[in-house]
Amino acid sequence: MVFKRKKKLSDLKKIVVCTGPGNFTGIRTGYSAAKGLAFGLGIELIGVTLFEALALSQKKCSVIFNNKFGKFLIQRFYNGKEITKVQEIDEVEVTRLLQNKKEPIVGFQFQEALRTFNLFEKVDILDIEKITAWAIKNEGSSPTRAKPFYFVPPRVSIPKAK
Image (tube, rainbow, N blue to C red; front, top):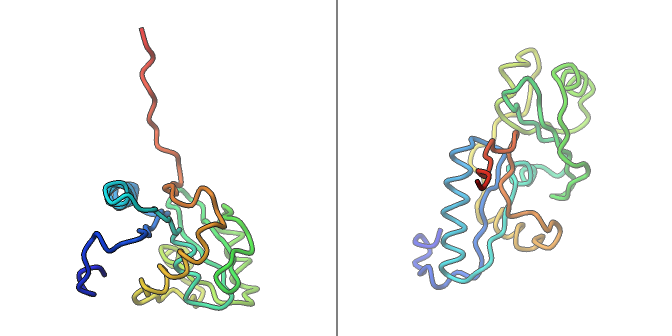
């Protein structure tokens, strides 16, 4: 976006990064690059979850993500604001939700598990400028926003001193 607009990195005032959920390596790589740029340029880093980014495509919706551990993550939004926190539900609960669907359901990586339902899964290209503007406008709403979102916390421990 910077080069497309014929700007320099030094023109940036803030950096917005997707914090996940998603592939561990992909999230860490993108987050680390954005954090390094923000630190190097002395500017603020703002995080946006994939749930928030996908929810901007609808006025009111539920965003579902298959966490690949036999569970699904779901969060509901209205006008880009969260109605519920991210919740972990099982396939039975997702099926019940889909049968009683009263609003669009947005997401990905869940259709394979639930082929019998006609889901709104097609999200072509996310509007990066819209997501960036939304993130900057709403940056004060979550103090932990610019931290990676993991399904399972990294299994890393600090060695004990001898």
